[in-house]
Image (cartoon, rainbow, N blue to C red):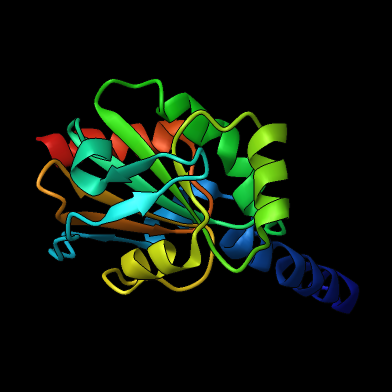
Length: 174
């Protein structure tokens, strides 16, 4: 083998190997960062929603699953997943609850309006802290999936999409 061929091969491998492991593969990224059956039960807290209404967790979680999504207006992956969450909110088996993390009320309300968020969102810091104190999370976006008994059945760190969530919900249902 010529020296030039060997050097070229090594350089190509040095470029391609990181892409194979760190490329834009959302499914693999989500799978690596998904925990199943955390087992914690979220208390039936009463929350003040961005709409001004007060609802408790049991009222919001009136179907098979509730996805509690942690987001902020300054978080690009969070904003990218909001249209996916809007689609999921139309599924009769799933309810969505947004929790705004480390954001101003003005920016969060603008995001709710601009992205036409169609599910309840909690802005009130005290109410957000009630929920955050009961869950395990590390950064945003994070989505915590509860079953109908308010038990944490899965936590997803990173951006979500409809297809992945539906597969996960299907596996949790069986």
